[in-house]
Image (cartoon, rainbow, N blue to C red; front, side):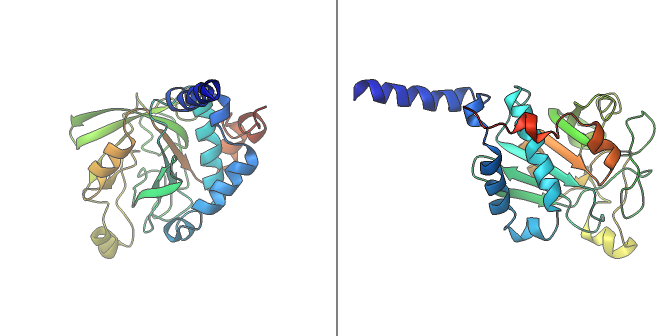
Length: 237
């Protein structure tokens, strides 16, 4: 009995202190069940595509398995399939499989008007970038409290730090702005948030967590190495 208890303690410690262990990554059937449960949340079901949630989870577990996430407690999704007048940013508690926060979020001014349709990794493009990011350090700059984003997909978003793509608050991201203009204001490429929420969101996701920005761009999906479920969601022996 004592030997079995020690083995159980060791297994728990593996998942707590070494979450990248393969046994802490769900099988594909387990993940599908988690996604279906999460998608019953009305705010997610009414504001985000199911397929985007699937893609985000796939990439999150790939990064977790590869040791890329210092903060694997949360996953943030921005669904640019939706117009700017809808909530497009969602923070998910991965341990409890529940929604923590949701928010309006702006896109780059050269990505489109009410909808983001053009994307770039090029400095000076003033367009949003797609793909998987890992949150970097916070700082206080011209927009106040802000969070740097590190793009981790080569040729897709890996210029994010050089482009100063950050999460920050902006007065053009609000329901009042939508009432006056029929859409949100736009950034220089940053996923800007309302002043009423940006600090809360930054504090939830800072410190090396996964952020996924998506829009139905087939060229991105075909180039991303993080969206292959055969590689990522293998059922551990």
